[in-house]
Image (cartoon, one colour):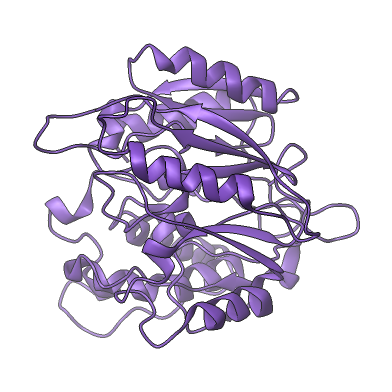
Length: 346
């Protein structure tokens, strides 16, 4: 685990906002220990889950004796270290406590072929957590959608309609899949993502629900910036959009940090890549005058959480920030259903 990742998790744990996943009971929002330095820049660390001699894969660990649990935990940590971005393989869906959890599987859109062994990872996570697993047959990374917990979903045409994701699916097919597997009744399609983004427009750098009716949307204020027109288009789409009840959304502009990185290699720096935990919102900052503006806006829309800025320029050199290296695990309500995203819980 890299220094930036250790600092992020340590800071959140220090304030008591994260809880480790447990075998049973409520699983609080927690970024999984799944991050390291950018894996594509070094040899894979998991060797397709085979033994050192290149033999067959190790048996999938099950909850049994203490030795099996330790083996599962060791495999889990070792295999997750092969890729930094949690939102490329983590699951979506309803996750009440215990055996009623569901783990959805998705694949990254054909990039980084040296990391294809990561496609096997969900079966190991499902076995480790002792939960059922299903495969909807759609490429849908965690950062490609954002939901309000009530039936509305944000995504981008650049990502989910990209030929490298789901060439066999039309827009209506994707919307039907989101409805059938995630209960989405209204898909709000934005256009493109920001410059430097290797994910083909993940929405978690662009627009995020902060409560069931409110969206923060990044807007570039410099008309000469490469992101200006793209983000203006997304902002206009949100202003015209409605939620699952055909009601207009409250759309709050969020500034951008300006260019980060060398001119020849613009990095995908955005304040929208924040992570909502149980009592805190972790927000990437970039040593820019807009850092404080962004933190102030987010504190206003998250009055019940502490908004903490974390320096993320070193992290964004890996082409993502805080939300990219985490994946929320919704805490269920007393009724056993996950709480809606936003101020109450993600």
